[in-house]
Image (cartoon, rainbow, N blue to C red; front, side):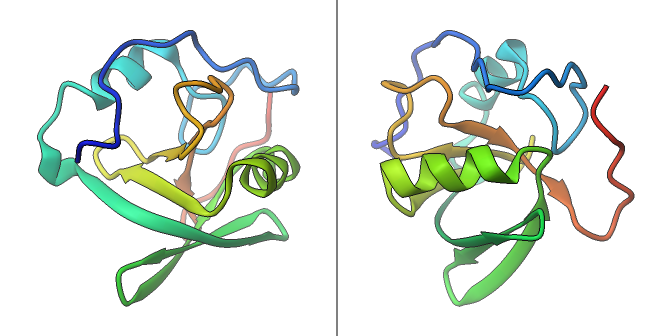
Length: 121
C-alpha cells in the first residue's frame, strides 16, 4: 500500500479532552507507529460513507461496516476536509484519512459497535 507513509508523525491532538487509549478513543502515538510495522495484509483501503449517531460507516470493498468513535463530530469534520478515502489498520482498528501524515489529527481509533463503548475520561 504505497499511499500509506510509514514515517512517524506527531501524535494527534484531537480537540477533545479524552485521555482514554482504549478502542474508539484517543489514538496513541506508539500504536500509530506500530500500525506501520505490521504486514500489508493488516491494511484495508476504505471509504468513509458517513458518521451518524456516533457510528462511523465504512465501505470496505463490497462490505459496509460500522464502528464507534468517541469524537464523531471531529471525525466528520476531518472527513469533510480530507475526503472519504482512508486506510484502516485492521490489527489496531486505526483509521488513517488521506490527509495523514500532513494532518496528524487525521488518525482515529475505532471500536466495534457490538462491544460496550466506555465514556471518555
